[in-house]
Length: 377
Image (cartoon, rainbow, N blue to C red; front, side, top):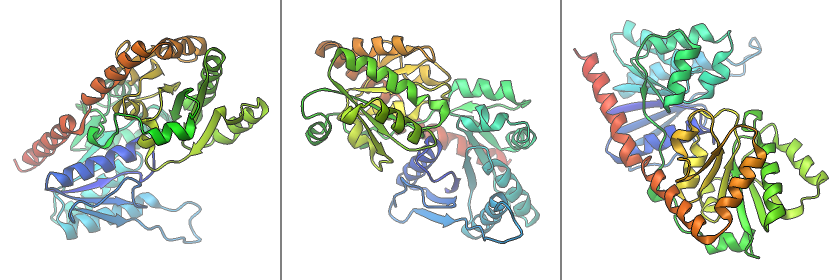
């Protein structure tokens, strides 16, 4: 099967999952064409079956804003027509789904039929998508996709709640490639960040307000009052500078370290004792799942799709949004003794295996086959 994948090529969850999906499909023998404005950060070749097509927007002075959606549409038409794509799979509704629909119409006028599937990932529905200026286009694109998936039951419900769509939306969760995640800590990581044996807490995000990273800091400071600990923060975004300034004012020293963007966060994750996720809204919680794949238990808010990933009392513990004292108490409960920490580490690994690519990939392949069979009726 020849599959075109459209995604954002960044460290964000939708781009990471789309990239890993394409690589996994290539490993199964499919040919995968990535179509985006930059090479995805996690992209790797698989025996010549993974190809990348750059969408380049010219800097023409007439345009205040580069017309990315139109250039993407043209690139989709070009790749689908010349590479003989069987289907296109777009990740994140804005603007990928509408571009795919326009490309499909142009191809149809040329006598070429290429179905497209839209996967909804979260903020394209719960945040950006709720902007009234986007609603008509998103609704239209969802309705006219040949199939639509959402990464959690929570996101599926949110889509029906926020958009007047009538069509079926299938839930296929995000996934991890378990074999790529170390399940035992790297002694070098422990030596680098916790040479004195203190507990290591970690958070990974895009540092946007919705992640409430300041709550992570407050949870950590409460934990540090009760036991020696250090906090590692991976990622970058609009809130990072403000939070760094806050840490300097509070003189946290090296107890809180901002590591920025890390290409292989799993190598750091595996050396940590607890992952903290304080988001106000989280349609899935891929970063939490990646932590669990390394055997790191999770203390998280109970919002959105997070309870579908972090199983309360098994892989970690859940608290209401903003309950800093409650999350700190939960962190201390998990870290309090070796037996409890070990039980949660094992629970995190077992829960993560439920989301292994080998369990999820066949669901996408079945959907592809279903769409193509329907298209040829």
